Image 1 (cartoon, rainbow, N blue to C red):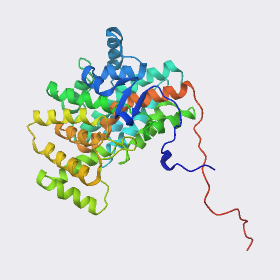
Image 2: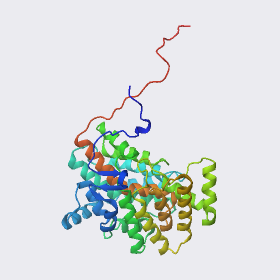
Image 3: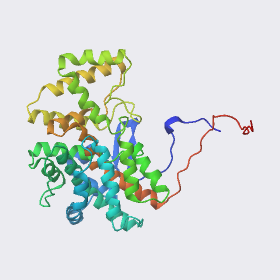
Image 4: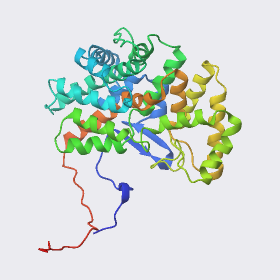
Length: 370
C-alpha cells in the first residue's frame, strides 16, 4: 500500500468549480473572482448568488434572489418552541446543528435530490439559518425571539433579529465583509464532510448537519471563539507579549494562527483586519487592536506563523456585541452557501467517497476453546 497521508494532507480527492485556494500567490477566488474584490464591490447576497449559481447576478436576478431569500426567512412555531426548550447550558453549535436537522423533518422536499429541489432547499437553508441562529441568541439571553423583517437586507435583518436594532452602515459593512470572507473555502473539513455524506446519496439537510458537527471543532470553525477568549484573557496590550511567550514555552496551542493550506499567511486576513480596525474605531476601542498587533508580531517573530481569518474576525464580532459562543454559528450563517454549492456539485457527478485503510491491529488469530 502507498504511503499513508494522515489528515489527507496533499491528497486531491475531486474537482470543484466553486472556489480555488492558491497558496502560492496567497489568493482565494470564488468562481474565479478574488474574494477581496468581492468584499469591496459586492454585498453578501450577490456573493451568495455567485456561489450557488456560478455567475454574479444582474439586477433582475439579484432582486429575484433577494425576494426568494426574504420569503423563506420565517421558521415554524414548532421550531421556535424547540429552540426555547433547548438545555440552557447547551452550546449554540449543538443547538444550531439540531435545528437544521429538525428543519429537514419539516422540509417537503427533504428527500428530493434533483438539482432544482436542492437549489430551492439551499435558498431555504440560507434564509432560515440566520433566523435560527438569531432566535437561539435571543433565547440564550433570556429575551423574546424577534421575527425577521423582510424590508431589510440580509445582514441588517440579522442584526435586527439579534438586537432589535441595526448598527451604523460601517458596522453592517464590516459584518457583510466577514460573511463574504467566511462563505467558502474549498475542501476544508466541514465542506469535505458535507460531500462525504451526500456522496452516499443522503439528503442536503443531513449533509449540512454533519458539516456543522465538523465545524464545531476548535481546529476548524471554533477558532474564532478561542481567539476572543484569548484576547479577553490577555486583557491589555502590555501583557500580550509575555502571554504569547509563556504559551510558546509551555508548547500550548495558540488559536487563530497558522493554516493547513496557507503557508505565507491567510489571504483573507488583510481585508478582515481592515474591517476589524474600522469597527474598533467606530466603537472607540483602541485596546483590542493593540493587543492583536502585539500577539501577531510576537508570533511572527518567535514562530514565523501568521494569523488566519479567525484572528481578526473573533474580536470584530466581540466589538459588535455578539456573545463569544455564537461566533461559530455566525460562521455557519455565511458558510451555508458554500456547503450547499458543494453538495449540489457532488450530486452532479457523484461517486461514493470510500477510502481504504491500512490495518495495524492484531494478526489473524483463532478463538480459543479454553
